[in-house]
Image 1 (cartoon, rainbow over the protein chains, first blue to last red):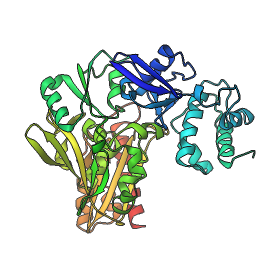
Image 2 (image 1 turned 135 degrees about the vertical axis):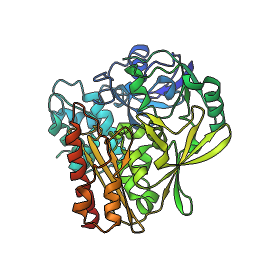
Image 3 (image 1 turned 90 degrees about the vertical axis):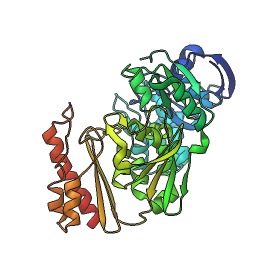
Image 4 (image 1 turned 60 degrees about the vertical axis):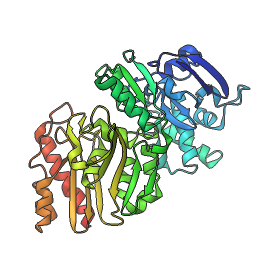
Length: 155
Length: 274
């Protein structure tokens, strides 16, 4: 099926099989390998991207369902000059990652969370990221990074 | 995991969806948010030959005041429900329970119609609609019909919908600020309930429905009857598992589920009177 969508602001057109999952389209057709496949069963959140501004698990979205939408992945969050965006920089500052596998999904889920709730409490950050698992048990740094970004600076 | 190959058809209207279902019969499945169906297809537990995508029918995405009830379009997403001001005023139980489904990503995609039509007894919203005594509206080749929630759930993954019917709307009574409770017991964040309870007081009667206590969401009929006859919350909760047929699985034995049902109904009723 012929589809067209926008990925990180770039218009893309493609012929896809209806069963092609969005995460495979992003990784294998567009080469955007920042979005990881973790559990592949809608649990871990490693494949989280934004679909029209809202976090979704791209292992559980068909590419044909994303036809006509705007998709945002981790590759699109920074300005493109290599600099980290404020949320990424906060993750780095607070050691919000160890192995890094969950990090792209964490950043995208946190981006969606902060859009819906720009000033979350710590509890709201923890509950808001319940769809993302970190096997290195790095949650404290992740929560700190999101709270600092919400507060607009260092804490 | 990759689903088995299927043909994909996008419906531009409910009528077109009904026609496509009529054309393909049992080989076709409706696709809304896909958050119940796609995981099953990836595991190849489900392998429909045709998917009829109704996910773009924006006119089925609403929460509106229907006069004596609240009308919710079948394609309304869980996230829409958990942020609805109208539900906060008129059906706060549903607003709260919708916010407990899965996780934020799941709630951005999953729909109330999909959750109900999927008829998974472990899902939260079927029990909520049952406790509220809701009515479901379906469109088929002969027009529309209404189905009481109590008649809708037939067995595991089986509803009263005919193969060529589309669930279009859910109607719930306006219960306003009357007491309600929702208790969900699971071992991990984002998991399905091992057992759950939805309870709602409405004009002197109390509806109590159980999650994951049988092949369908089921009312705790003996507990409801006890309450109607003036029994205490503790005495009503003590019979909450009567008439249920809970499954045994890796999470819990049937006996443990019965225990949980009694404990969770006691908590729910305490919350409603407390």
